[in-house]
Image (cartoon, rainbow, N blue to C red; front, side):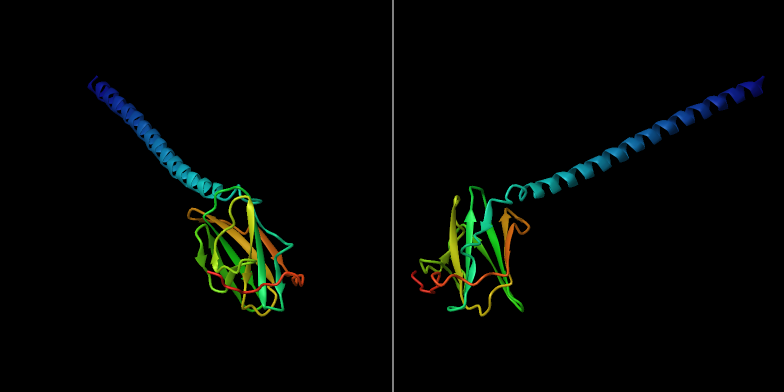
Length: 184
């Protein structure tokens, strides 16, 4: 009889041990799933925030093909940019030639950029076009037509992808002279 009591106590302990083990495994699984969800949610939220900085600007800023050209008489390139109504911190402009290239940022605040003036005014104080407007710039001291001109907006700390480009930049109409007259 004593053996039966002892066997029944051991069976209860064994049963209790299995219940505790199951509860611990379930709690551990829930904790791992919760931790994974938190990490994934933070990663996705950050990624969507970065993506949303650039997803609404595809047709908001563009190169004006009619006035973007190379002027061989002055060895200058005209770059014409049109802008719709939207927030923009700066614009990366990349002008590539067969063997070299140049890049610069146009910002909301006027500044001087080497070899760059505002077309028609001769001002060396350059800035982004205002909302719902456009500007043409004259990049001087270039000796061949660019192979490609690209623009890529920057909003906050996010540098967006190229939104517009012109390949095989044409020769300017003779009436479009890029005269580097500085009036500041």
